[in-house]
Structure formats: structure tokens, C-alpha cells
Amino acid sequence: MKISRLWVQLFLVMLVFFTPKGHVAVKAFTGTYGINYGRIADNIPSPDKVATLLRAAKIKNVRIYDFDHSVLQAFSGTGLDLVVGLPNGYLKEMSADADRALTWVKENVQAFLPETHIVGIAIGNEVLGGGDLELWAALLGASKNIYNATKELQLTDVQVSTAHSQAVFANSYPPSSCTFKEGVTQYMKPLLEFFSDIGSPFCLNAYPFLAYMGDPDTIDINYALFQSTKGIYDQKARLHYDNMLDAQVDAAYAALEDAGYKKMEVIITETGWASSGDQNEAAATVENARTYNYNLRKRLAKKKGTPLRPKIPLKAYVFAVFNEDSKPGPTSERNFGLFKADGSISYDIGFSGLKSSSAASSLLSLEACNQTFVIQSEENGSENRLFKRFGSSFGLDMQWYKSQMDEKRRPTALNAIFKLIVGTDDQSCSNSSGDMHGRGEISKPPVCAVRRE
Image (cartoon, rainbow, N blue to C red; front, side, top):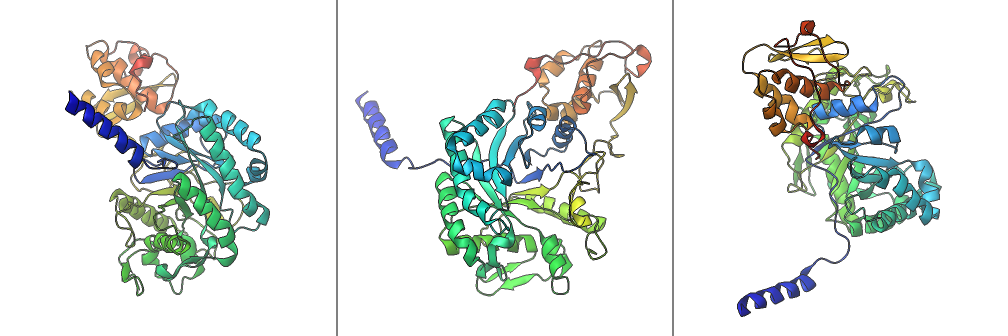
């Protein structure tokens, strides 16, 4: 007994002396792959259908550029990890008024937790390096006030960050020579100190597409597309790069190290490739966009780091879910989507769209009846495989499914699975509707059977 007490006392002493001081880092990214959900369009699916689409694609990490309540409500109970945005237009008032920042966090973050899994707040977007110097001055104050509001409200799992464009760098070739621009540094260093203190990463919007478009005569397009190429060799760092994205990320790491923040992680908050463009945007093709995004997905799936930081798996949010027809600028700006406005895929990189012709599988066929869909098995005994393929992905509990496996209830279980996928209201079909067994009404699983992630 004395020995046990001695160990307890020793443990308490160790807690006092060895518990890290300062803020605990919050992780807002699960895995390595995420996506940006931009909505500057008048023809894209509703937020609830988008949530369904992203769950079907198993894309868990999602960023939006605002705090639209219809989106926050639609993502409730989905298990998707959402980063909301505080647009640039709010920075000045949030910087000047801590009470306003507290109210904003209460109304637009806390009010939706925990059902909507908000894991982060992005303060502005590409502020430093942009044309509004007043926003540069407001960025740090807004970040601090929003962060302090999350602490006051005890929202300990919400990360605060801001995304930068490559306009903050003085040079990025070779990667090891990269530094922050002289005019940016006076704003960047205090910001880095703050984000380092609270454990937030350096968020970078990195586009090999834009770099290649700016210098197509010098840059090998295969290097930009993750294709086979000789790459580049950084003589100073003695590192070889076989793709441009890794080089862009390591350039950011070099700039951070030069500024005194060697240990800060770099996360890509935007990257992508346009599938269509103007006459002077010859690289913006469907084939190039497919190649880039397909190879990017493969590269991220390996969960490996960059040549300079090989032990830190690269994480990236792809831009974007949809082509956005209302965006200003060149045609390419409206064609970065992995999905078209109707929810079908823009090109095949392994995802199925809401209306993809490849959605029908060899295991099942779908038939419609009064806005409700039923699943007709093409081979006996395939129900379990159907559940494993779809039901578990959409939050259905296996125990509930097994309880439906008697002869009368089996159609109910399968229909409920697909009802979650298509998001229809609860209705029933007649015997002629395609019900596998010609009997049994469609019903929703009980609330307790839906898994909250």
C-alpha cells in the first residue's frame, strides 16, 4: 500500500513538472484528404444533397468560405468535419470589438455544436499579400478575438487559422531559398507567433496550375501534374523533387524556418486544376484536371511527407466540390469543380456523383416509386454486402440491420439504407413497385440506430 501511494505521489509530481505549458494544439484534420465547398453559383445542389454526396465519396474534411446557416444545419448529424469561414469583410469589426467576436462565435459556431461538427474557423482568406493593407493590420486582432471567444465559450476542439496565398513569399525557387516578402514580414511574424502559441498550422493555398500557367515555357507540365519527369534538384538542400506541389510546400517550410518557426506544420487549404479555360489558358483541360486530381488523391493516400519534412504526412483540401458559374474572372475560375452543377462527376477520379451513370453497381439496381427508391438484389444473399457497402457509411447501426433480417423486414432494412443516401421522405411503395419480396412497408430506422460520429 505504501508503495502504491508513493507511485501516485510521484505521478502527481511528474504531472506538475512535465505537463506542457501554454495552449494545447487542436487537430482539425482527419486523415489527409479534404475539399472546399464553394457556393458562388446559382445552379448547384442544395446543402443537404451536398452533404449526402460528400459522405458517399467518404470525404470527411470540408471547408466553407462563410457561415451560412443553411449549410451548418444541413451538415448536422452527418459526421463531416467542417471548417467555417469568417470572410474578409468581417475582419475589421472583429479586430476592433472583442464582444462582437464573442457574439459571432456564439451565434455561428456554438449554436450548431455538437450536432454540426465544426472543427475550425478560418479567419479571412489570402489577406496578407492582397491589396487591402487595412485588412493586413486587422488580421491578427480578429484572429486573437475569435480565438479568445472560443476559449471563453470552452470550445476547446475548434481550431483558429488563416490561409495564405503564395503572394506572401519573396521567391520560391529553389524551395530552400524561399523567404517571406519584406513588406509582409512585419505582419506575418506576429501572426506566426500567435498561431505557433495556440498550435495552429500554416495554411497555404498552392496551385501548380497557376505556376505552370505563369511560365509554361520553362515548367514541365508533367512536373506540375505528378507525372513521370526528371523533376528538379535543390542544390542547397540536396533534395530532389519529382512534383511541383511538394516543392511549393517545402518552400513554405523554408520560409517558416527562416522566420524562426521550423516546427510549424504546413497544410494545403486549396489546390486544384481547372478543367476548362479561355484561349490563353491552354492547360485548363478535362484531361489535365483529371490527371492532377487523380494523382493528388493517390499521393495523399500514401500519407507521406515532403522531401524536407518526410515525417509529416501532407494534408490538403482540394478546390473544389463544384464548378461555380457565378465566379468572376477568367473561365478557369468557374471550372475547378470535381462535380458539375447537377451533381454528376466532372471527370472520373474514383468518386460517384449524385447523378453519375456509374452509380449502378453490379450488386443492385434502383427503381423509383412515389419519390421513394427500393433496392432490388440481383443475386441471393447480397443484402449483407449491400449494407456493408452503403449502410455503415451512412451511419446505420449493424445491430438494427440484423434485427430487420426476417423475411418481412428485409426490404425495410435495404430501403432505409438507400433512403439515407438519396435523402427522401419516409414513404411506402405498393407491391408493384419493385419491392424484392412484394410485401413490407418502408420505415426509417430508430434514432438510436443512427451513429453519431
